[in-house]
Length: 248
Length: 387
Image (cartoon, rainbow over all chains, first blue to last red; front, side, top):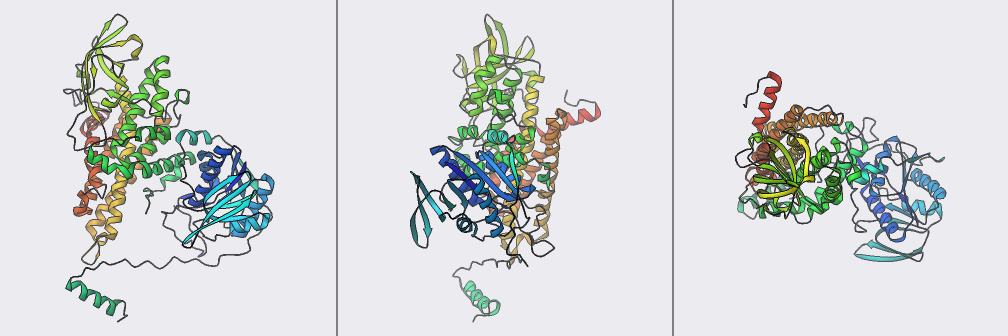
C-alpha cells in the first residue's frame, strides 16, 4: 500500500505565543516547533498499516527550509521517504491543499493520511479541500480505521456518539485522538534517519486566497477563586457578585 | 501544561536537528513511562518493573557505543540530553542508565577483548543483560586506591577476594565490572552473576535514590577466567569510566533542577496568599530567578563540555567542574523549590522532596562535591590537598 502522510510544523503546544511586530504573524523568536500532534497520529497509522500490509509511507510537508526538522522526526519514527515542498512562509489552507494535491498526483497514493487539524491555525479545511481537488472520498476526524480488500471502514466521533463510514481506496483520512498512540522515535532510528535524503521540490503554481490582516492574543483568562461554605466566604461571594461582577 | 524545558538563552539553537529529536523522544518517554509510576516506586523502594527493557528498546543504553556492538553510535551531546531528560524523571532512573552506559558498556568496549564485547555489549544495549560497576568499598570511597579487594593469578584465570559497597544495580546485574588489585595494581575483571563465591545482597534503608537498587558485592574466592580481565592497569581504568559517568551526571542534574524549577514557577503563579499569587512577592521572585540563572549557567557548561568531549579535548578536571557545579545548584534549587511550595513541597503530589532527597546522593556519588573541589584546586595550584 502506498501511503502519503501530510504533516505540518506548528509551535509547541507548551510555547507561549507572541504576535510579531507586523501584527499579523506569530513571532517565531524563541518558539519551539514540533510535528502537529494530530499529524503524529496520521504518521503512526501509516506506519501500522505498512507493518500490517507492507508498502511505502511517504511524509510530505509544505513549508520552508526550516521545516526539515519535522520531516526528520517523521523519518526517525519510521517513514520511508520524505518530501519538502518549499513555498510561501505563511500559506493559507487552499495553498497547502493545492500543493499537497500536486504531490499526491505525482506520488499516486492509495491512502492519504492527515491530522484532523493543525493546532496552530485550526482551519480544519485541508483534508476536505484535498478530497475535493483530487476527487477522492475524504473522511474526517477518524478515531478507528480498518482497511480490508480495498474497502475502508472508519469510525468518526460525532456529538454524543460515533458514526461508521465506508469508502473505497484511494481515499483521504484525517486522524482524531484515540486512533492510536504515536510511538516516540528510538535513538538508533534517529541516528539512522540523519543520512536519509529529503526530496525537495518547488511549490506548484498556486496562491493563497485569503490573507491574515490581524492577530490578537485572547484576553487573559481570569483566575478561578474557590470559596467554601463558611459565613465569611458567603459574604465574600455576595460582595464579589455585587462589586466585582456587578451582577446583583 | 506539558513540560517544555528551560531555554532562557536560546541554547536550543546550538543543537542539531537530530539532537533535538532525541531530546523530545526521551522527554516523551519519561512523560509516559517514568513519571506516572515513579512516586509509587520511590515510596516502595523499588525500581519500576519493565522499565529496564523499555529503556533498552528506546536506545537509551550504549548511546555512544559503536553500532557494531549494538550501540547507538551517537555523540556525547546526545548522551547528555538523554541523561537530562531521564533525570527530569528521577535521579535513580538516570543512575541506572548512567551505570549501564558509562560504567559497564564503556569499559567493556574500551578495555574488553573482542569475545567479551560480542558477548555482553549487544545484550547490555537492549537491557537483556544488566551491568554494575564495583569500585567503592566500605572503607575506601574517595580514596579508591586504598582498596582491599584483590586478585591473584591462578591457573587459567584469577581468584578474587574482597567486598564492594554502594553498588548501583549490584543485585540485579548479570555482569559486574569489579576493580581489584593484582600485584598491587588496580585491574578490572568481568564477574558473571552466579559465579561461585560471588553474591550481591541489596542494601536497605536508603532515604535517597529509592527507585534504584543499591547493593554490596561480596567476593569470596571467586574464580574468573583469563579472558575476563580488562586491558587497562592502574586507577586510570576506573577513573576513565567515572569521567564518562560524571559527564552524564552534569547533564542529568540539570533535568532535576528543571523539574523543581518548573514546578515551583507554576506553583508560585497559582498559589494565592494575601490575595495575590506568591509569585508577586519579591522573595519568591528572587528564588525563582536564582534557579533560572543557575540552570542557564549549568546548561552552557554542559553544552560546551559535550562538544569538548566529542572533540576529544575535555579534561577530567573540566568534567569535575561541571559535575560539581551542576549537581550542587540542582540540590540548592530543589531546596528553594521546597520553600516556594511551602508544606506542599514535602508531599508526593509534587516531585520536589523526591528530587531533593535523590540529589543528596548525586552530590556525593561519582566523586563527592568536596573531592571535585580538591581536584580543581590541585589543577589550578599544582598542589594536591588530599594526600
